[in-house]
Image 1 (tube, rainbow, N blue to C red):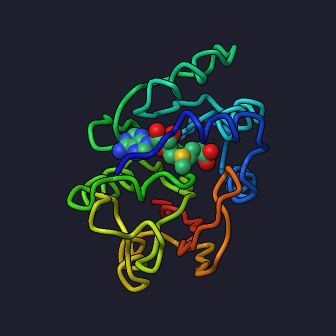
Image 2 (image 1 turned 135 degrees about the horizontal axis):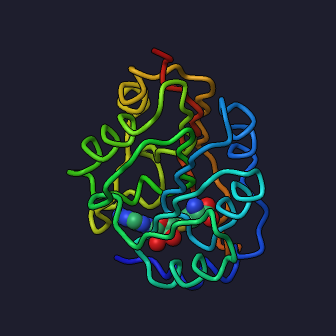
Amino acid sequence: MTFDWGRFYTFTKVSPPWPLLIHAASLAARNGHALDLGAGAGRDTRYLLEQGFEVTAVDADPGSVALLSALPQARLHVVQSSFEDFAFATYDLINAQFALPFTPRDRFAEVFGRLKAALSPSGVFVGQFFGVNDQWNSPDRDMTFLGRAEALAHLRDLETIEFTEEDADGHIADGSPKHWHVFHILARRPSL
Ligand SMILES: C[S@@+](CC[C@H](N)C(=O)[O-])C[C@H]1O[C@@H](n2cnc3c(N)ncnc32)[C@H](O)[C@@H]1O
């Protein structure tokens, strides 16, 4: 089963940045290089640019890449790539809002390991994992859903600043109902 990302972008292209990303940006040691993984219609990329970051915005979807490329910014690098194939550099902040769970489950540990290694000392990671009770956790979707202990295990080598579990009925961007099981994460790579 695949997602209609174009429809998602229609609903989110004028959305404000995610509050957790705003919090994360306020904790970054410097407004240097940020990575926005699964940048979508660019709500967070825009915010990071406004805060003075140099931003690499990555998304596999050509519709996202077209929207991101239309943002008029010299400090923006748009990369069309899957998370699995992306060649990480080093970043002061890595943002992945509602993005990493779309990684195929057999690639998740490796991708997240490379993500962590791409954080500079004191670099901040902000994003979500999905939990096993999420409504999208079905055999026809090759995504990654984690138990709470598994989610925490992936964060073992980071300093966790926030780890909030949401297991509740809610809505998706177009207003349709959905049961969400989400771990909202804000964490930092220890300084040297
Ligand atoms: C739910 S949207 C979130 C977009 C944005 N972060 C936001 O919060 O509005 C997920 C985004 O991840 C992208 N995506 C999904 N799977 C991906 C993958 N394996 N590699 C790269 N991008 C992917 C989709 O194209 C989509 O733009």
